[in-house]
Length: 145
Image 1 (tube, rainbow, N blue to C red):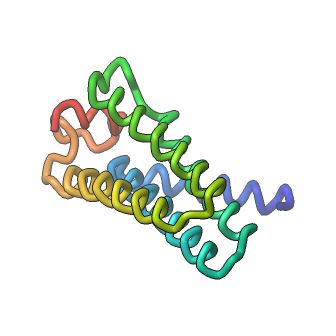
Image 2: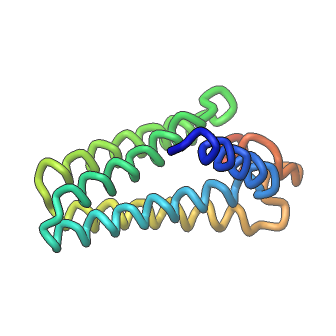
């Protein structure tokens, strides 16, 4: 990636993160992770080892990003549970690469789908976050939902 292209991408990301509510950003990240796991599953079926590896690495990167944003002080028990869930999913994605197993992809897709639905429901509520503050740290909202 050239420096100019990287700068434009960074600028576009900054604009998007300023205009998209935090809960919607989380839902979008789940959508991207789900897509990557589906791509990994399709790559397994095609016998595309590199495609599977790249797709699982992208899904892992998304989950690691979500995990790194957890606010354990404000998120309390929910943040701890999400942290454990993300760790589990990351380990399962690594196992997909070791075992080349589409059934693992299905398990991961089920769990990601459940998490996505929960965040989408929270995002669709009129108040969204506690007190209607849609710019607050997203994980703080999980403790009030």
